[in-house]
Image 1 (cartoon, rainbow, N blue to C red):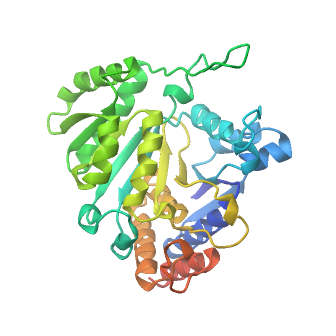
Image 2 (cartoon, rainbow, N blue to C red):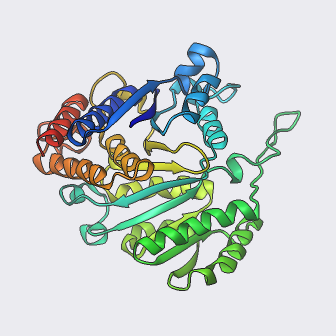
Length: 356
């Protein structure tokens, strides 16, 4: 059986890091006898430049007809520095999430023994940290209407909107993942201030009795932001709304020592998307210096979540662990030692898999 993978390299370092993930996928297919069919498509600033749309109809059709989407990154300074731009790369990402029904973003946060010293946090705080952040992805302030500015341009407004259905499906997903792990769920909100958060807490309390073996706690987002830094090992599974999850998961990236090491999976109604949590890093684009490991580990999640291939995913993780132990790393984590290029790291990982 040939699995169809939509490949969306995107902007900045996206094409370089996705190329390494494809090398690793090809090594896996050779070793395990799978067959993959890759088809590339435009997204982000690259798509705006070529066709005027950050998520073209052809790209959406490809994603809908694929078994999984391997995604790079989007964003470009010319849009970041132009607040008046009518079309922006990020609009494509939001539209992709909405039209594919990608309501849950799964971001595992854990440590790598050889990288613990790279974290700005004390070793005793981060060593052994291992939790899953589940971020609601298609509701909240990023999608709420009305949104805009007043006629005189001096007032801007956004609306945070959630329905009970949207909240319940993501909270139930959180309980289910907690059941597969250490059976503890933290629901993060701002129920002391926000009406939407009070609905989150109400739904959580309604759903909790259906999962009597799961310990559940409710935590205000400001407290959660502090606890992630001061006591990260207290968390098992964390579920929260869109904007809170966006901020908290980037904060949590310091636990691993490098944002270049953290993968993610966006799952939901249609085709799932697998992507690194970092951005397009335009300053490094074309220099062959970006860390491909987050994208490679996202490919590992693709094997596991999209295809149910657990051995394949485990071998990719093993390869990444061994590359770190061997010091085959890019400049962001080289610690003054020899820094390997993006493509050299990809080659090493693929070779390790083929020889394993």
